[in-house]
Image (cartoon, rainbow, N blue to C red; front, side, top):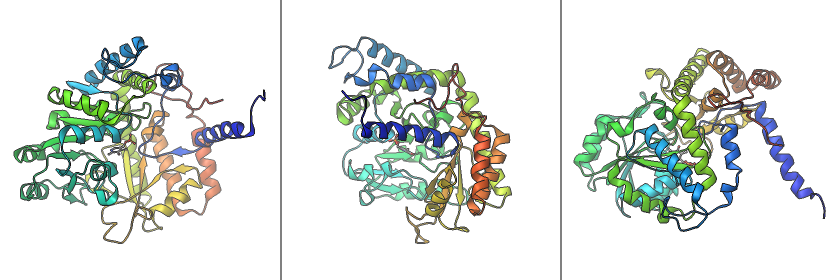
Length: 430
Ligand SMILES: *Cc1c(COP(=O)(O)O)cnc(C)c1O
């Protein structure tokens, strides 16, 4: 028997190369983070080979003795972390959690309110015309909130007027988004939405770690009945999703998750979610506070260098994100590539006004920066000043070698995961 094959070796080599590249880079994609050693270890455990289906104690498969205990402990910790009457940790991603909510709380043809994509909305809230999940998969009609570009937030008065004027009032109102700098006015608009018979939902995919850490807003206390999230963005867990709600929706959500939108859920990921909830109960408050302080320091550093940082009127950001208009250089697509060539990993971003200016998803006007991962690697405000300088140099594109060198130098002291139990190297694939 051959010991290995060239095809097999090729893949292993590339995974190693990826880790090596990221260890000398600035990983700044706002939807990404790094999980602790223990979360990564349970992700490669035998749990990942198994089937459970159903709720703990009511499984469709045998062999779930420990799987049930793990899931019940995840549920208990999740309820505590979010002060929620109900949590389902089975959705295999944030989009799947959203689909479960659409299925549980609306019917095809109903209206849902959401943010448009250039104003920060996510494709899973999108219209059928753009292949958005809400329109394409659940046939929802989407109406948009009015948006105030200066404040980079939902315009309360104009939105309230729009909601009351809708011929077909919204069954669901989704708050939250992907470009998400400031807390949404859930408290102000929830009464208007309820007045016309709608249920308020909140997509916390991006900001859930900040919510759990008490640093953003608390949707379930502000009028939202349901909150979905991803478990791998500001919550530094494995890739996955979850949904929390008040008790009244628990039965319909359970059915919408299984069998509605998943058959088997990912049991290794449930164990990873349980560990990350435990990590957040311990370290969440400090982590969330440091993330927001870092994002604000980065935004100020970039603005000082003359970059066009959005949200200036409100102090640039109250989340883990910073949005920069790069149209004075080129466009977000070109900038994303230019930065990647210098080991700075960010993504291009549609920003308000792009569509009117003829810019689209491939060549939008902005880039979005996230500091959740750099913070988890241990960087603080001092490092954010250097990151701002490096970014400013990199955007000009004329001193590539210096940028690569300074980035590598900066990363030297940040190769481990903080806000974790025990020693946790960031890169350990062999
Ligand atoms: C990232 C994101 C999602 C999707 O999450 P996945 O876990 O990738 O499926 C949903 N909603 C919003 C607002 C997001 O930003």
